[in-house]
Length: 223
Image (tube, rainbow, N blue to C red; front, side, top):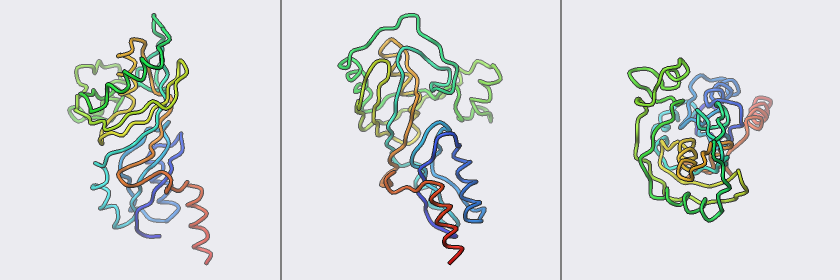
C-alpha cells in the first residue's frame, strides 16, 4: 500500500506520532500523517493518510467527533486526567445519578471552554505544557474557545466513576469537560479513560489494529 486513508484503532500507551511511525515502517514510506491527535492514555479512532492521501487530512481534522469517556469524581488532576498529579478534595460527597445526569446535560449546546494547562496549545511560540512543566504559572495564558456539544449522554454511574458519551466539535478537550463537570458538581473530577469512536462519517467499527496491519502487509509482500 503506497497511498490511501487508513482507520486505526489506537491502543493506550502510544502517542499519535508513534502510530504514524509504526505505519511508516510497516508500509516502508515516509509520507504518512494523521488527522487529529489522541492523548497517549486514550484509545480509538485515528485517521491515517498515506502518500498523496495526506493532502486529504486537512479536510478531516475539523469534523465533529464522538467519544466515550470515564471520569472519576471526588478528586482533581493538574493535567485533568489520570496521568497528572491527583489531588483529593476536602469535601467529598456522593452525588446522585439524577444530579450527575442533570449537570452533564447542562453542557449540551456548548460552552466557553478553557484549554488545559498541560496542552499543546501554543502561546508566544511555546506549548502550554512546556511552560507548565517548567513551573511557570500559565493560568492567565490558557486560551478560551467556544465548543459545540451536540449530544451528551450518561452511560453508567457508580460513585465515584461515571461513563458518558459525547459528540462535539473539533478542538473540544474532553479532559476539560470532565474537569468542568467536577467543578459544577462541587466535588472535582478527572478523566480516567477516553475512547474516540467516530470522526465525521468514519467509525471505530471499521478501524484496524496495528498488529492486523503488520500481518496484512506481510501477506502482501509474500504474494
